[in-house]
Length: 260
Image (tube, rainbow, N blue to C red):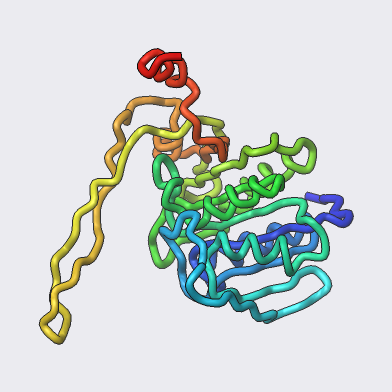
C-alpha cells in the first residue's frame, strides 16, 4: 500500500505504556501515513478514562528523534499526553490522533473506563479526527500483527474522507489470525455492564486490601448489530463515538415531567 504522506502529522499514544507491543505495532503502521509524535507513560494507565493530573507537575522527556518520528515519555495520563502534545510539543495542529493498540477489548461500556479511548475523545475535543484501536486479548503473548491490515484499511478511509467534528472511532479487533478475521463491520455499542467483585486479601504486614476483579455481562448477546456480537463472531467492530453524551431521545419526556 502506497500512501501520500504529504506533511501529515500524527499524534500517537496509548494507555498500556511506552513499551507495550501494541503501541509499537501501531507506530509501524502510522509511519506509513506521515510523521509521528508518540507520547506515552512508561507505566500502564489502563482504566484512567479522561483523568487529568492536577496534583503533581507534568514532566516530558524526549527519548528519540528521527526524520519520521519523535518519541516522548510523559508522567501523566493518556489525556494529559494529548493535551501536552497539542499545546506544547507539536509544531502544528496534528492531522490525526491515534490511540492503541490497546491490550484488551474496549467494546461496549469499557469505552467509559478506557484510557485508550479517552485519548481519542480528547482528540475530538480539539477538532482532530481520532481513532482508538484495541485487540480483544489480554494474553501476554497476544499477536498484534494481524491488526495491521485492518488498521491500514480504516486509516485509508480517513485519508479520503475525514470524520465529523466531535466524533471518533472505537475500533476493536478480534484476536484471530488474519485469514480468520471475516471483515469490518460498522455497528453500535452493546448494552452491558461490568459486575465488579473485590477479592479481600492481606499484605505481608497483615493489613487488609482489596483487589478488583469482575466479569462483563452482555445484556443483549444475540443482537447482531453490536460491537460485542461482531467481535465474538470474527469481525472487526467499528463504533462511531460522540463526545456529546446528551440522551436526546429522553429530552422531550423529561420536559413533560418538569414542565416546559
